[in-house]
Length: 347
Image (cartoon, rainbow, N blue to C red):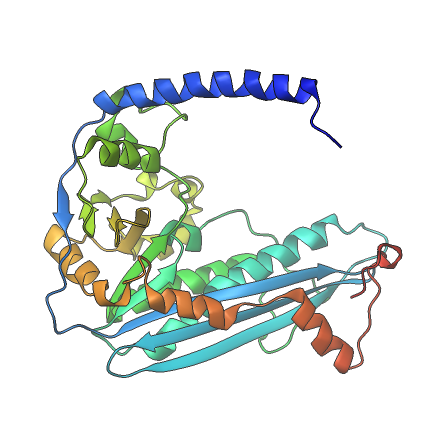
């Protein structure tokens, strides 16, 4: 179908407004304060780097919700190695009470299990002195909500069924604290949930939701205030539970102890290459500029592509799709109905 005159008109109207919005954003450039920047230079010597990632699938059938989680950990450096872990399960959908609560609980269980298995994989590979990398921010690993009870008819393949989803959250938080005691734990996020530098660098917009850290850093880059070489910016330290992003700032009292073991938390942004965007770095503990420089410089030889290769390899190793799971189930003799077979979907 050819493009209509009406479509051309609405696009022209849209992008005229878009241009005006871009112009107002560019005006922010003069308001952004400079931030201290520290270049990263590989000093030689190097350390081993451990990284992990996970993948999960959740599928709803007429009678049950099925989930699977696969995690992989890798070790780069003088002592290379790799470990894999997995968990799977199902929950029968009660025919009388509706399926929505089961949907929600199973998806939360799969999410928290994936985090727990990622940290567990790193625990199995570290023995002190390494850098441990996790894909995502520390806050995403600790994301907190009112966790429901796990249904009685939920079955796990390997583990004893926990009573609450919160038990999985507590296990993950405790494991992170254990890793942080043994080695330097660094969480690298490609996307951000909350901005930490807007108030510091553009105080006029501290209460605005229209700009975020990445936009501020892009304006600094375009202004020439950030180098093209690998670097990180002046860190921010979060000292108290009440300063954490919501909902972590409103933990139940009995859960605060799990977060307090990780405080203070260091936040910064690192750029490994002029070709890649800045990544948010969060780490347990109050890391000084010198400590951050040392640990992030040790990642330079592992990040020639602009992103740490150990994380990239862990991601490829753990990647899981429902098509693969369905083939395994079919070979084992399990064929379940999803109710969408008339649309050409099976398993």
